[in-house]
Image (cartoon, rainbow, N blue to C red; front, side, top):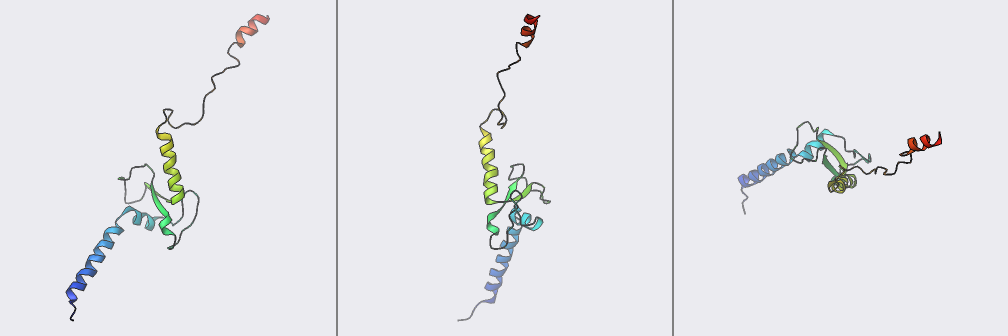
Length: 119
């Protein structure tokens, strides 16, 4: 059975084109720009564990992908999930995500009156 060399060339060309298209993705760009270290916990990654390193968009806009990578940071999957869960937790708050509460009791509210009564 004779093999068609043109078909093989077509398959190789198509595979290379798909690889080039994937390389244009922001994850691949970020992996080329930044060291393979989580930006939060500083865990380092190698080729075997690279699937656990994810790109986080700093401004949370996944359509904002500048070529210089200024909107990206590499986070491990655990830190990335934690970052997004913080956003989800603060999304329903009306206080802008602030967790501290303000005191409602003022022990010195009537101090002036008390001092007047002592004289």
